[in-house]
Length: 101
Image (cartoon, rainbow, N blue to C red; front, side, top):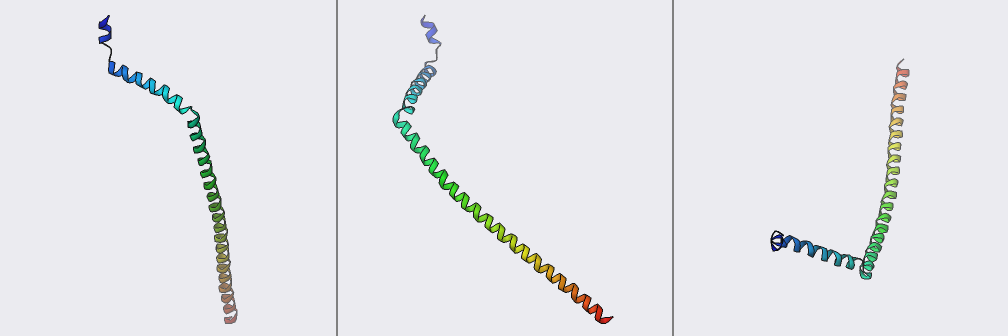
């Protein structure tokens, strides 16, 4: 009967038993009222951080929309000015051609 106990690796068995004991104690600790209080406070902090980040994201997004609209207006004005210059150039060519004829 003692021979069957000789082939058992007591080190591994002890580690397993300790793991089970710590796991059981860990479950008790993690489900305690104090632990729940910590979880609640951490969750509340995460929600506050999320709210702060969302405010910043919205502000950046609004600024980006303003910048985009301003850039579009600048390009439209530049395009209109280029078209006006092209129209003036062609009208000068027409006038010089009419004078020389």
